[in-house]
Image (tube, rainbow, N blue to C red; front, side):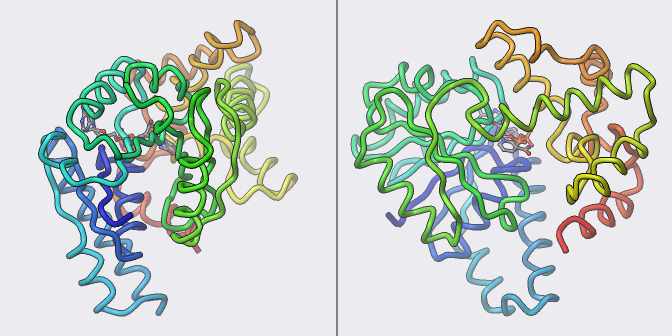
Length: 296
Ligand SMILES: NC(=O)c1ccc[n+]([C@@H]2O[C@H](COP(=O)([O-])OP(=O)(O)OC[C@H]3O[C@@H](n4cnc5c(N)ncnc54)[C@H](O)[C@@H]3O)[C@@H](O)[C@H]2O)c1
């Protein structure tokens, strides 16, 4: 595999493009929004600078990494030569089904189609294609250049060969792939999201404030970051949509999103990306400081 196309240049897409490009793959980064592409490339450049400052890479590595990435605003152009496409567009099942239908039509027959979805069924996504054996979940964690786990999700019809190829590829990126089956939330979010939701519920019920809840989990459970701050980093809209997928998929009230989370998403308080969530990130330096503390 040499040619990788990444769809979506947001929080996850730019991180995925960064990691592949740094490992010598030729990456086409695609987004419908040229502003997202510009912001995504600026984030990659900033993250590479941070790695130079920590002496993890050289200036030449930065130049080579950036040279390995080309940006596109249309899928057809951006996936022409792809050996692998990784979709990291907004977490919305109608959107993902539309994208995969298009990918199936415009990609070479041999192209493997992966999705970075946090919770949407891989089997459902694969069902709109004529290559269900070549559709797989490749769930990177945020921030992608730092976190070593990739949750590899086998859809109902994903072949053994494709699973092995994607496991091997993840190892070549220096990541640790872990294979799981395709049920709502997979493993990572099935366990993480109820904890985040319960933290929001605890706040909603007035048991404690934001800082107190996060302090209990950081200092008491040795979590590197409290659940409310983690929710801000993931994006509250992403958290809400994952909980909705699990609630719908299992028909179990324990996954029902807290009304406070629903309200905050409607009010566009989405966390770091919107400048405010459980914490205030309105001054860019504040967000930067929080990110740096976490990335140390
Ligand atoms: N944020 C996280 O911590 C996290 C972690 C793991 C997985 N994920 C998953 O990764 C995916 C992306 O999440 P994100 O947080 O990066 O979202 P984001 O909102 O930061 O970025 C999504 C990007 O997709 C683009 N987009 C929307 N429709 C498109 C289309 N038709 N074609 C091309 N680009 C399109 C948007 O312009 C935007 O730039 C989601 O499926 C999410 O569940 C997110």
